[in-house]
Image: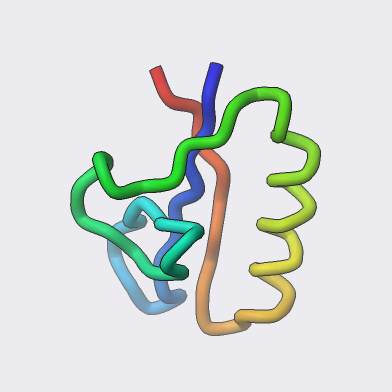
Length: 65
């Protein structure tokens, strides 16, 4: 199992995949950062930090197929 971080502005309509290395939203999943299950606890802490420190954005973790 692997995971991708998605995010959007609070006023935005759609979530977009996130590239963690470039700190930007991407359109194509090829450019999104993919995290293995072994990094899930660390990723959950990071996404919590991102949500707390970026009040104009919403970030969430989603499973990939």
